[in-house]
Image: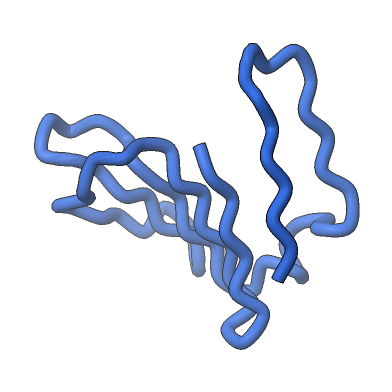
Length: 72
């Protein structure tokens, strides 16, 4: 899973899978869910992310994975 923030568009993309999305559904203004060819959720796109989310504090609890931090 990857969190990608794009400051120029103030959007956050949460990449849940390495599979390519083939379908999208806007579930709320500025929130789009992407689905792969199997109909599984592959990503979440959030427009105006800094107004909808607290991007200053990201907490990861009990995730059995190695965390990599890349700064812009």
